[in-house]
Image (cartoon, rainbow, N blue to C red; front, side, top):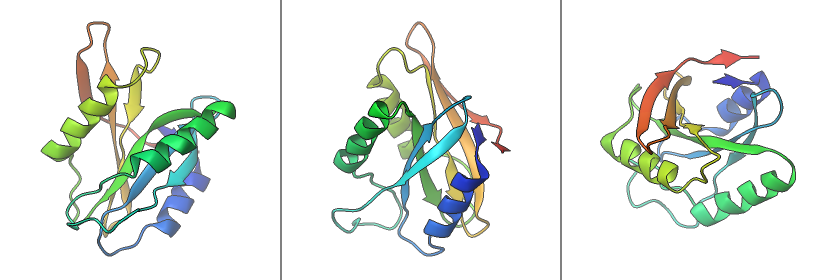
Length: 144
């Protein structure tokens, strides 16, 4: 995944070192570079600090705005605490659900984890092949 330094800085500034988990969406402008970010807003307090529950209605409304601005939705990021750098079973199930609900033209999405307290991005990429099989693999990170 290639992402702008500006997006990294914005995420770093907005994310708290303390629970609860939080997240948002990332978008691609030109040249296959992640250049946009929208931080999620919560309608209610998450019942547990151990997971991120996206405000789907809010985020979908932002994706609709991006479509009008020719910004491509490219994925969802969230925080993990305690230096947990891997996706949970629940994360993987949710990623598969998202991928199964994407239009055919969306062949891949990114699902970065913002690891705390180190404030490091660990990027995962989900891809759907022509047979509908979804694979999730760790991806590299390039900051421009």
